[in-house]
Image (tube, rainbow, N blue to C red; front, side, top):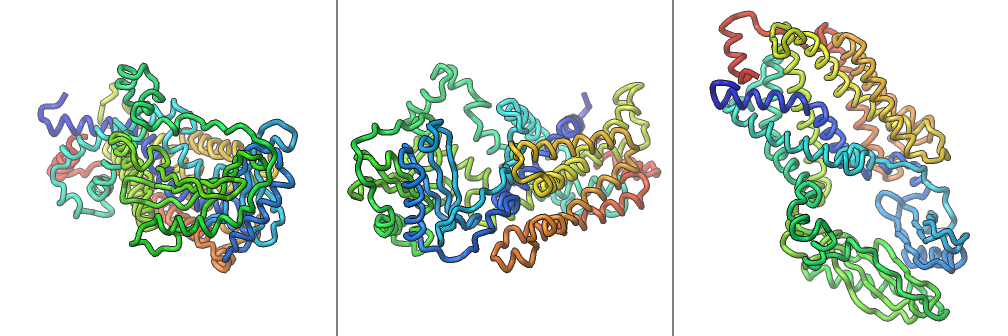
Length: 556
């Protein structure tokens, strides 16, 4: 180990950051993209735009939906009707499929809310949820969750050790020396680290806490025999873990006309929003669910919008009506997981989830999270590049006789992790437009495109000198981003101006963002090509300058 606390922390910071920096860069980049997962999904399903956005008569739309379901799913045990939303102007009808063959499989149909005609199904895609799933589980289930949790713990260690190492906190933040090789990477790394430190600490800690039953299971194993259901039952919140049983079917009976319930539901939702709320969105209706339609035990649940109560809850009120008489029965208000009356540990968990997932503050907070997430990814990338820049002269012998080969491998892995992931993310969007719309398991093929392009980029990075691999991969990623709007126009007929005319600012924003990112990547590729060594520069030759640089690095 080293001779001082600061040097010891610098050693810890360097090696924690190196071995998990590649993974954490991917986690932060995909997490940043996942902030706007709904907008990405909207762009990736252009079929949603076949219905013109605008004012919808919910009573008329619901009448169309009820008529369709009574004709095509009269024996189904459960219907769900979702009203048009900001990301899709169509009605969505779901039922269990027993009316169409008895297989019990879920069915879905999209209706035009104005005419009631059946619309073509939207293409099968995970959309932006792909980035979210990769962000927290690497598409590997609980194994991936555990890997990400372990990496997050190491990230917290790296951040604390980095704080100790870079003690000149505020001076580092205001220091940037462009064109100075290693010093420039150090300045960028320090400035980004200081700028995003509060966000990084919060996002890492909350990311661990929201998985506490899995990452900290000792208490559950000791006191509840390892059963999460027993724990939540003891806290009075087991309902979200246990599927709700359907009531038995009664005698045949006509279902109430669903549109007649909407006026009463809107009044109750508006009243429940509180005297201080004058927002019409508080009385908006998101969906209608019918259980045991066509029987005497039928019930109707009308769900209002999620309302964000500070940081603690995303509460949704659900109004229950008798499905035959239409009489109002009750109102249930609950959080997605714990309910407004949840026990203190679950309330705290809800706060952590809300913080981590940016479920408050609207688009202003989403953009803040997006910017901070990208800055965090850039901090990790600059740290990885700083490691290579410091060892560019290959004089360090941290791996003995194999040091030069290990440093060369690290240089290539930097290209694969940073440039390769940029190519894969753009390639995922290209795959959405190029794969056949009717391809079975299409969403799986899109994910396969993502990983295949990343694997191909990694193979190229490992087989090529970093000095040539960096500009080529950055240029390819840039071209994929710049050409994305053209590809979209050729395959779907949609483009930025048409999106804006249609009122779809989200899809237009995605394409404008792709253009901006593509231009930035091409600029970076040109800079790296002019540098001639993939951005890696050696230490200053002056002994005095070398000593100051080593001190600034904390002997990393």
